Length: 134
Length: 107
Length: 126
Image (spheres, helix red, strand yellow):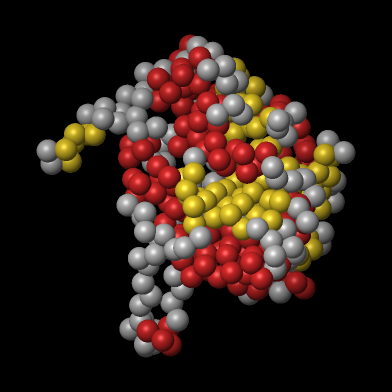
């Protein structure tokens, strides 16, 4: 069992980096590793509890049929998955980034911290990856 | 020996900077074990016939080049259409390298 | 304790809203917390090493925007003894002469980046 720290920056719905980051976290949990995710800047909106799905008239699909993703559900689901696999997933937001974006209302299980916390997670990790943004 | 995982997320046509990342992979390959993982639009360069001298330059060098299987499928590139020297790999490859302490660079 | 190298090539991305470069800021915050960090500016980010940057003067309605002070922030990084490198080839390609650089920025050749990465334990690619 190893510990991996991943830093992410992209807000939801803006970059292909986001699903790739989620895939990395999912794979790490599936393989039995502990994961720290540090969300910086726009990525702090990934866990925002106020996200809502919508129907899609262009697709001709109702709300249920479209099954539009809200990343907050992905966050919740990965936290549950980590529990099932008996590994630790820390999902930590940069607190100042949360405040300036007004996304304090986060799904349960998300914590807040600072760059020093990100550093401490990294120090305790076997591998560290920062996915920067454009 | 140091191990490196270089993750290329951009295609050479969307970013003019990709050439430098290929060059860095070659240089690090002289210093350690390098896995160059193409993901997202980065896999576009891996198609047989794609005109990207930068990627061609690291194939056959001391660099292991993989293309993310999901990104390939998402773009309709089947494994049989990859340039010689590019393997198809799961995202698990990146996780394994991180878990093993490889230094990771994302581009 | 690991040695971290922040490689910054994204530039002027959110500097007006954040009133700093968030990669430079983050790295400086890590240093304040006790981390061993260095910064490498490459690509367009080498422009952060240029003196005379001025982002003041924006106004949206009655709201003025103070703006970032990148020269102040780069000087602060140097004063904090965070090694700050800029890729010489990238400066030259952009026509930036050494006389325009903020004192304390160390130029490195592009060919030296691999060695810089090798001598650090962790790389943060911004």
